[in-house]
Image (cartoon, rainbow over all chains, first blue to last red; front, side, top):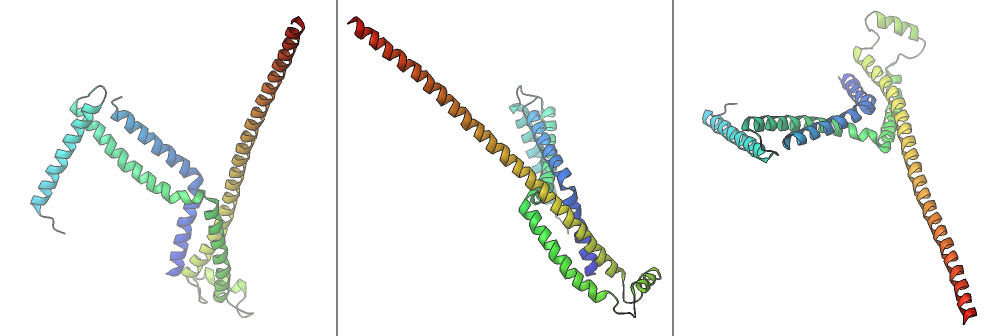
Length: 45
Length: 196
């Protein structure tokens, strides 16, 4: 059981580390875009 | 879980009232003011944005630590420690001596894992292999990040240096102007004195 838990944790941590450089900028862009869209809509444009 | 029906009805009415109130508020706040229907759409978009940005921010907070060099370095050290301890553990599982050479173990694996090996042993070894790869990835990423930070710091220093040079040039020009003015004033004074 411990071996499987160990492998799962390493795979999850690895996935996060490997995808971080691509996903982080994308997340930042998405958050900014969503917020600016919402703000524009609230102002009635 | 059994939620009393009146409570559900009261909660639903409350939500509907809040929704209508907020939608009409947003509709009147817009410039120029828009219809109530449009206010409902604005409110729905805002709620959707709120939920989605919250999820994205949560993901961002999971990813955030991996942009710090010290976190990456610590991870690398942890992985290294794990690998070293893992190597010790693995040597316990592996068959020892001439009685069980590596070839026999490999043959045993293909025949359905006898000789004390289980799928869990393989999962653990695979975990250590993944850790080894991760160590390389983390080291590379830490180096890239450190290079980028050093380049940024260098550029900032250079910009500051250029600013200082600009200020020095300005001072030099002002000093030269002052010198010209002083010489002019001295010659004017000499002229006046001669006339007197």
